[in-house]
Image (tube, rainbow, N blue to C red; front, side):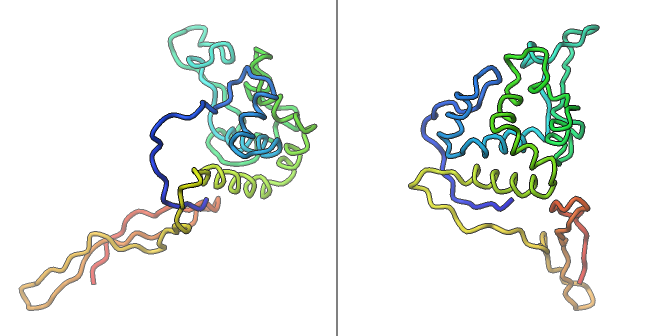
Length: 208
């Protein structure tokens, strides 16, 4: 995702905007619309946000049952089968009818907010996500960038800040006994993972 600087601290809280799982679809749509997102984008934000993570029993005991043998221990139910991978499995499993998303097929129907949101356009958006992984990734990127770039009208964000591909750090000059000067330090190299996600490599020392 692209990042722009220039945000300022809020001086007071705004109206709470995080949807609760027991709210109806109209309340959800109104909350997203207040932030500038329409119904299709609401589905996208929820699906993109729920490709990671899980629902914990301590926070939502009426959605995820506690551990029967040890009620004090934390249990969680993931939104899809690839809990730590950013992919479109959340949509694929939903469309196939194999999802175990606790907010779609949870034990408390009043809390199945993902089911209501995903189906709010007749499953059109989720079907498109399930069919095309690239479309899912591009949609998430665009929606997340819009979300983090939403600021008061008085705030002017900077141009996109792009990381350097090669960044020297901790450089130093050392005068040696033989009368020469040695430049040493570390070089941080930006590389791409197989998944296509940017990730900095380990710092490597370089001496010139």
